[in-house]
Amino acid sequence: MSLTTTSICLADGLKTVAAHWEDARAGWDDPIAQAFEANYWLPLKNQVEAALTALDRLAPILARAREECS
Image (tube, rainbow, N blue to C red; front, side, top):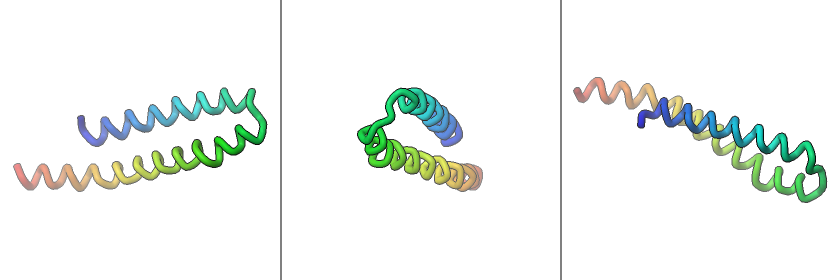
């Protein structure tokens, strides 16, 4: 699987989970929901977004390395 494919799959997964979280959050508005969002959802979202940024930066570097090695 290429980095581009991996990035697309990861981005799609994040969108899916975010949509499900928004649906759950619409009917779940208490201190536990707020704590879950602050302690789990937002850190996970930020980490996935950082991983996507890293994959986007790494893809052209690896493509260049493949070209130079072939």
